Length: 255
Image (cartoon, rainbow, N blue to C red; front, side):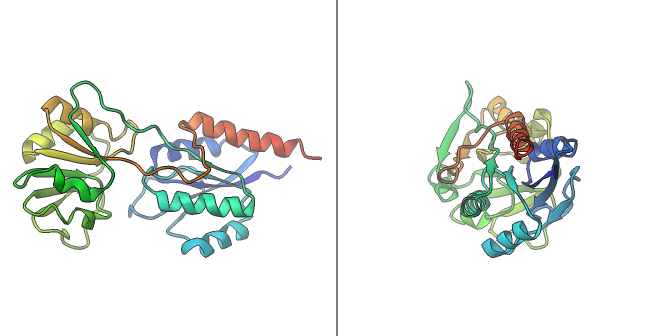
């Protein structure tokens, strides 16, 4: 029996776990794909391509050329454009497709969260003169353009190739993981008044929320987009692997 050719859309800690597990399943021949947002991503345990597909047509051509039989979407919870395209193309081609979407964060006692639907709402809640820690990554900083009169600090992994795109802003270059103590020290040193983050979920990015709680800082929490229409995500690596094994079992039962 030929192995199931599977495409893993990666970019999260869960995707790294999946890559490690998939590499150990002989019935699966998996390829990982990274969007290329980080210049030096951590190595995966699978053959890996880096960069965009060139739109829908390029994605479809890749699936055909690589004879992909199933797609496992383990991209970032805010990579909604990729997830929607993936679900749509797989539906049209009749390919099994699953999205792994880790659970969102929920506030704990002592948290001071203000939840908004988009970045443009930040100015409605953050007063002028505040020092703001934008823990949202460097993409789409233009969406915070209405935060004039605030000092903005954005953390990123790669050194910037261009100046900060907004007045009163600066980059902080550092690579995770960060502990709660690290985040407390950073917020105190920089005099942070507000934390802005996206509701990505997961444990890796949670220390900044715990630090904000311990310091009594308000958090502007950007709600995540809804999953693609008709898609029911799973929330754990274990459930995603069970889905992959079910594909292998179904193939083994074919005459």
